[in-house]
Image 1: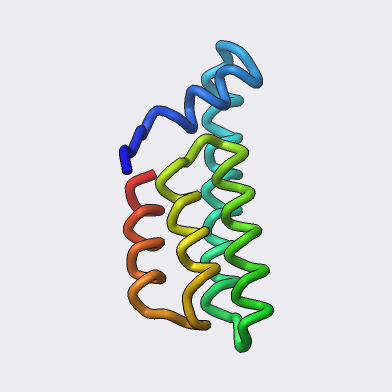
Image 2 (image 1 turned 180 degrees about the vertical axis):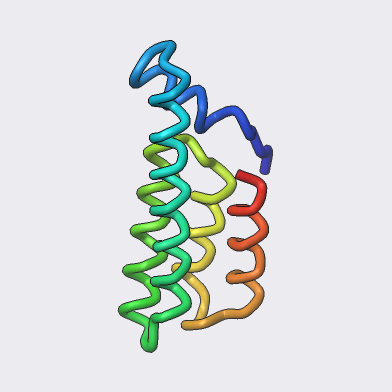
Length: 97
C-alpha cells in the first residue's frame, strides 16, 4: 500500500485554503485525535471495545486521507483484542504522519 505523507496536508488545505497557521493547528488536532485512538485500542479489554476503537481510528484516518493508517485500522478490527503486531504497525504509521 502506498503511503502519501502529503495527503493530510492536502486534505486540510482543500478544507481551509492557504492558511498555514490553521493547517498546522488542525494537523496538530488530528494527531492528538489519532493518539487518543491508539490509546483507546490499548485500553480495550474486549473484542467489542477493540473493534469500536479500531473503527473510530479508521474513520478519523479516512476523513484526513491517511490511507495507510486507515488500512491498518481496518486490519486491527479483524485482529484479536490487544494484538501486539498490529499495535506496533499502527504506532509506526502514526510516527510517520
